[in-house]
Image (cartoon, rainbow, N blue to C red; front, side, top):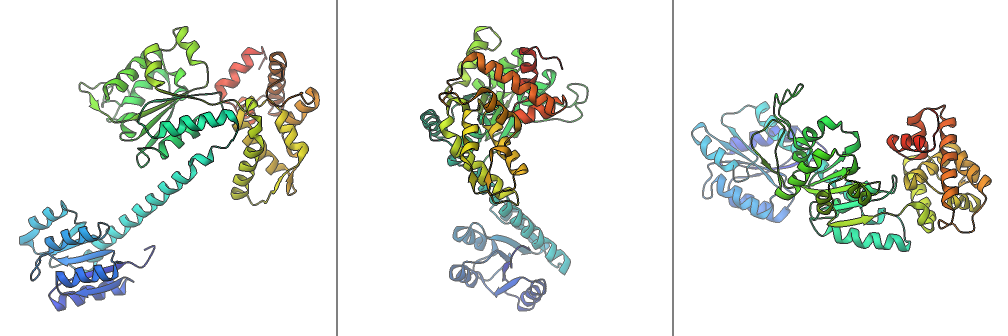
Length: 457
C-alpha cells in the first residue's frame, strides 16, 4: 500500500465486526467500526478520510444498498464492498451497478476478505498513478512550454488558443524540427479532450499497403497475418485526438477514406462489412508545401480543405532568431534537470554563433546543439568551443551576416546546407541515421538533401 488505508466496517454482529477489524489491523489498515448505517454516515461526515467501506447488506434500519447510495452522494471516491449471504447475491450484484466496488459472500475466510479489499486498494493506487501521469502530461504540454516571444510566434499563440477551444480539424505546417507535434499536443492537452487519448501517427513510417489497416483496423482473416481483429489507431484514439504527422506521405487512395472518416465520423475496418462510429478529433501536419501538392494533384483538394479548418504555420528558426536566447535558456533548464550538471548560462560569442547559423534542422537541431554542449563542456557557462564543430565552422567560414534575421541569400543558404550535409556525413563516417540525428532532420529529408545536392553516398 502506498499509504495507510482507512477502512470503515459496518456490521451489527459484534463478533463478525471485531473479527474483520482484527484481520485488517494486522495488515496495517486503519480501522473504524460501526454497528449501523447512520453511525457510518456520521463517521464519514465528521472525518471525511475513509477510503473503503465494508458493509453488511442487511442492517437494522437503513440497509447496505441504501447506505451505498448515501455514501456515493457524500463522497463518490469511497469504495464500498458488500457482505452478503448466498440468498442475497442477486441484490449485491445489482448494487454493483449502482457503484459498489465488489461483494463477498458469507461465510468467507481471511484470505478471501483480504484479496477482495486488496484488489480495490491496487486499483485505487493505479487510478492515482494514472491521475498523476495525466497531470504531468498537462504540465509538460502547457502553452508556456512553447518558447518564443517574437512577432511571428505571437500570431501562432493566438491560433493555438483558438484551436484548443474547439473540436475543429487543425493543419499544422512547418519545416522539420519546428515543433509541430509539440503544438498538436499543447492543443490536445489544453483542449476539450484533454483527459482522452492522444495518438500520434507518423504517416511516413507506415507502409503504403498497411495504411488503411493501421488507421481503421481490420477483421480477423482480412489479409495474411491478420490473426485477430484490430480496432486500428482511430479506434485507439476514440474520444480523443489523432495526430497525423507528415500527412503528405499518406497514399492518394487512402486520402479518400480518411476524408470519408472525417465527414461521416464512421470507419470501416479492412475486411469488415459494417461501419463503426468513431468520435475523434484530427490534427494533421505537413513539413512541405501542401498547397503545391494540391496544385500538382499529389494531395486531394477536398481533404486539404477539410483538414485546414484551422491552419497554423510555424516559422523556421532562421526567421525568428530573436527567440534563440529564450530557447537556449529553456534547453539549459531542461538538461540541468535531466543531467547531473549545473550550467548557468551561455557566453556572448557562443550565443552570437547560434544567432548567425541558418538552422536547417530548426528547434530540434538547436536542442541537439545545446545537448552537445552539455556533453562536451566542463564549465558553468556554455562556450563557443562546446558547440558542434559544424556550427562554429559555418560562422568562421561565412562570417557574421549583417543581420541575424534571415538576410543570408538563397545561394549562400544552398551552399551552407550542402556544406553542413557534407560535414555531418564526414563526422559520422557516412552513417545516414547518425547524420540525420546530428542535423536534427528525419532520414527521408536527409536522403532528399543528398539527392538535391548530388552527393554520392
